[in-house]
Length: 194
Image: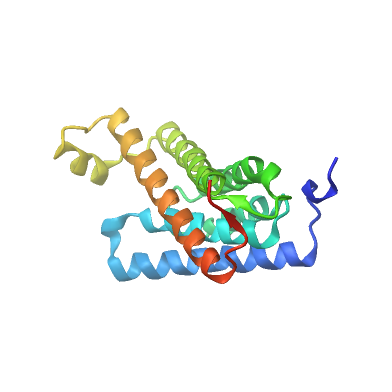
């Protein structure tokens, strides 16, 4: 067994995970405040995917994204929302999913662009599904979203799932592409074209 794939919570991993988790929340608040409530958290998916990818590529050990998910989840409990408790488990699941997909690639000198994007999109999918299921279980009304979905004839639970998952997957993919762009400008040897 290769020892670099075992999570060892050292100060580097903890520090990077904590800093990028905090940056994730700060950037999400800034963009939500600047653009307004119309975006309803869509920006957070972009920032999470971008920063989680940067973290994974910087640390290159299993556990960094998982720890970022744990820290982010606890920080998200401070969001002034009646449903903020749902963000804890979804953030943790997101980080663990990202790590599990990337696990076999961390030891490679260059990581394929496709595996980075896949990790971001699938972890975003897991995050979105877990929050949506929780919202339905706890009877969240979805009034604003249903009004928007009615305009396109999709005001139903299926429409809510399609919209919620689609926005997260798209923004997670865009976040991964942005991270790849940034990383390839700093150190082009880290990213491998498929």
